[in-house]
Image 1 (cartoon, rainbow, N blue to C red):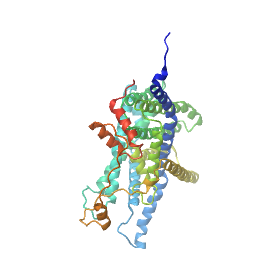
Image 2 (cartoon, rainbow, N blue to C red):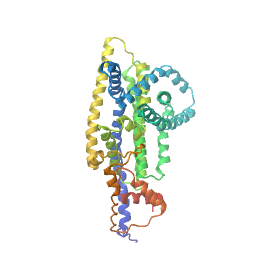
Image 3 (spheres, one colour):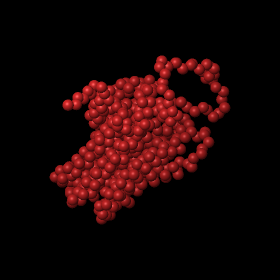
Image 4 (cartoon, one colour):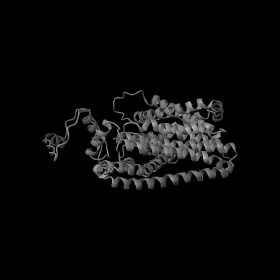
Amino acid sequence: MLGYFLEHNEAKYTERRERVYTCMRIPKELEKLMIFGFFLCVDAFLYVFTLLPLRVLLAVLRLLTLPCCGFSGSRLLQPAQVCDVLKGLILVLCFSMMHYVDYSMMYHLIRGQSVIKLYLIYNMLEVADRLFSSFGQDILDALYWTATEPKERKRDSIGVIPHFIMAVFYVFLHAILIMVQASTLNVAFNSHNKSLLTIMMSNNFVEIKGSVFKKFEKNNLFQMSNSDIKERFTSYVLLLIVCLRNMEQFAWNPDHLWVLFPDVLMVVLSEVAVDIIKHAFITKFNDITADVYSEYRASLAFDLVSSRQKNACTDYSDSVARRMGFIPLPLAVLLIRVVMSSVKVQGALSYTCVFLFYLGLVSLKVLNSIVLLGKSCVYVKRANMEDKLFERPSTAPPSSGKPPSKTEQERSSRPPTPPPEPEQPLPSLSKEEEGEAQAASELKHRTPKEDLLEIDRFTICGNRID
């Protein structure tokens, strides 16, 4: 009879047990990050409907009252007000252009296609949505910077009007693309055998195959987590649009809502299951602990707190868009278009209900912002990032050949302090490993360099199981 002494390989089996515990912790830690990021997207999305119209109205009132109050200062409007006016104009123009797009005709055109063709169309739309999101924020940022650029600088741009036309064209095309996605999902919901909906949900599990067996570092996993948050929020808005269109077709019969409920639940649960499985195996194969999601959550909280400061460099909704790739303008245009076509407002009572609904949205936005800000302050304190909130970003040297100040000369004349000698000699690294370690050390809000070096060595060697 053979005897097995597992204590001889104690380190090996302890590591295996820790991997099991990590996989068991992934759903809880991942959902904490997902819920926090979801409410960040909700806050940025509600901003478009609630506070943006008020800010645009205040900017217009400033322009109208400027001759009476007198002109003082170098700008008619502050840079933040200029950006708000541009966003409002983009929303109004794109909404008026969306009236020429017939949603019913698009639905019947998609419904006449075969199942395989619709499956291919849906995959192409997902890829196009990611490409539009990545390039769209650059277009909007270029517009905002061109409109608020200091006048004394030498301009090397094509002007505000061409950038504005590009931004309107982008938001309109992105809104149409999301409308086609919603129409395809609506066709899948209304199909008799539900085969198209099953195929579309199985497409989420194909995503596991394309990402699980790849090498991931902590910064790459952070980008994937942000993308998953954005995709989950977008899918929920698409489900809302599908429910609105179906309820309109059945004269707002509440019994039909229970018919849609199983399909909606299947879509939501498949999204959650795919994210959990994907992140669990990515962290397992790349030897990443579950605590990394608390670091990601602290990074998002840091972006929120820093954007709420008085001298913030960027607007909160723009920082969320840059971090997660979520641009609320096209989605807001489509949702306004669907709501306006689905809900008929007639009479004084209806307009009163609309006004009360708007006040409810404003209250929800303010309450959500207060809770998010409080939670973000707690996460920032736990991660010991309070000191970084007061650090000013380094600016480029002035182009006007002014001599440096006395303090700058004293700083430059000081001899550099020698680095402390290490207590233990570090192992020699190759050039590739040194480059990976240097790139990892430049990331913000990460664990110490030793942990990142170990992760980099593991990912360089490959995902192997002994």
